[in-house]
Length: 354
Length: 91
Image (cartoon, rainbow over all chains, first blue to last red; front, side, top):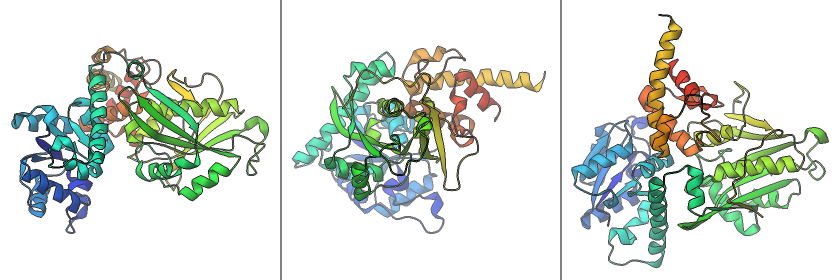
């Protein structure tokens, strides 16, 4: 049972960023303000772990009327902050939940404290209906969402106890990653991923269902999906890539000579559920190998260079793609490329290609 | 003592702290003993994008160096030694 929820402030309890807002301070998220009241009525504590000065916590307290059992403000690790809050309240980590809009803050806490229930603000809005929060009535959907999180916590706990490398753990967990061409039924989920992914998104802009349908119908383009499951659970469609121009004969816009065919990947995106589970590396390995098999001599990935999508750039670097120094265009993009000769990134044996 | 030697000493000091960070973000204590020349990506350490990002966040908190902002290709992450040198040159 969850006895204390630790909240982030910016873009979580507040609808904006406290420090950037000057005199015009953001308001409280009305849905989460309701959650704070509901939790308090059930005797579940709330606390703050924020990068803001303590005045931000006072401000949230005034706005929402919430009574925070502990306030941790600072630049240290939020996992350490949560551990201090738990110790101060004499609670075990599995009685703690943590809510943050930033995927990396969530990942850091999940890695350091695998027993803590780590939630996005969207899920936190529904979480009071889950069994861990002891509601009066539990709906079937709430039970299903709660089970998804339980799977993640079990996987995280098993990973932190496991001795070997990440790849050894993925194999041990029975990881199954399936790479397949997109089908029309996938389009709504693909559109949703293009809107929701930020840190693991190369293009940084949404793709409409209509555009995706056009790509699906075009012989020169392909839309590739990634599905991920393991012994802990099935996460379904978690990622995708769009590849274009790797078949000089069929694409009308491809006018490069046959010997220097270039495969361009305008979009790579991956859900945060797949983070740390080898899915992005596997997708990049497959893109290299598939383009090479089609006769391309080079793979190019135009990628927005931002503070947020550093994980995407790390995956590109690990797959051997490089951009020319100083080549970031005024629109914030740089083209990362690699020749498709020599040793290509390995495709792990738990990947199935359809 | 020349400036280079100071940088070497600093790099060694940063390297020792980086090993501890690496062990923490990967959950693999044995990486606390990784050699300075071992590749971080691929067969060596097998640093993935999650562990790599968490490492760079710890680096930014500890040293105030934003590696991702200064190194487009993240070549500084080739080995633990190259990352330590990159950071030591900026603190």
